[in-house]
Image (cartoon, rainbow, N blue to C red; front, side, top):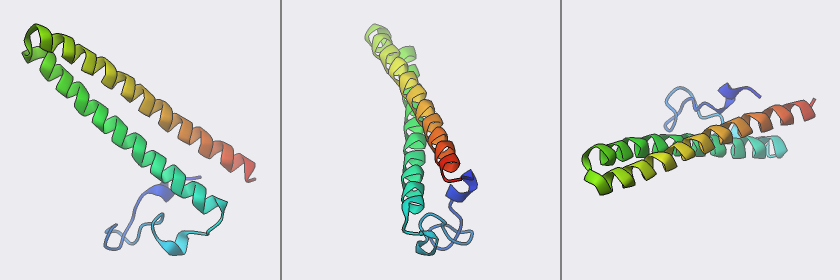
Length: 108
């Protein structure tokens, strides 16, 4: 399955010609369409988790640098937890790609 098929393109919601995933004409109604929707939602979720984790690293660094002794402890905990979240998001993205590859080979 090509990753380009998940990129939004067009119409009002997607300015370059229509969202392939959201366009009802491209939804086959079968298992393939259902899997495509689930994979798209999972991709969006992992990107959101990764972006939030990066913001929390910045917040933790701010606390660590400017928060005094208590801020250093709290900032350190926030940074460690954010790095764990980034690792989980990366593993989730890897798992999604693995699932896509397995499903593509099964469908041969």
